[in-house]
Image 1 (cartoon, rainbow, N blue to C red):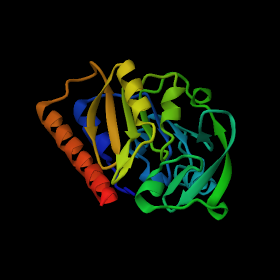
Image 2 (image 1 turned 90 degrees about the horizontal axis):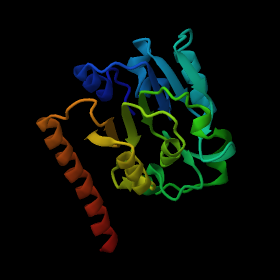
Image 3 (image 1 turned 120 degrees about the vertical axis):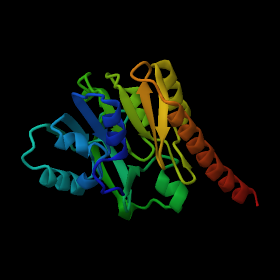
Image 4 (image 1 turned 45 degrees about the horizontal axis):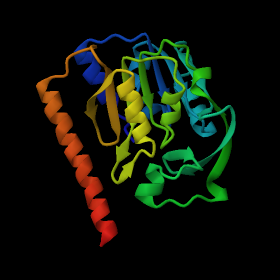
Length: 230
């Protein structure tokens, strides 16, 4: 959990002097941890999507009185209706997924006592077509946002990895990213941040930092596989 303000994505984009009119975060968790909180306090129009009723209540309370926020208390999935979610501390994920950070990293076991049923929507039903920054962290279901998205944001942040975890839809995500004219800008401990080609030039130091991040992530996965085969 990152309760720090001036999130890395915000700081790096401020340095690039990129302006945004509509930011969107799918999978907020607690309001203090929001990846777009700085944009919210800057007054940028923001769409927040969060399915957990407890977190929805916390978000409404924390941002009470702010008129620049639209909050959708739903899960994003591949159909409209309801979906079962499993809860593991800070991780809430679609129960039918074969891989999520909690399942892979913490050996979490799904049971009836830690699941809840919530409304779900296709992202195109929420997307107004003008989102220019998108942050997605929904524990393995990120692909369903991209797959049904109308907008083509300038910046897209996606949870793709973390410790031994790799997003189960990473091939689909990477294919979509390439087909729609994006390139990788940087990676942190869990997210990959993509930029629309031509928005700005990625510096030499940023390229080196990206390669270092990729090597570290690859090494973590190699260690996991090595341990598995012992």
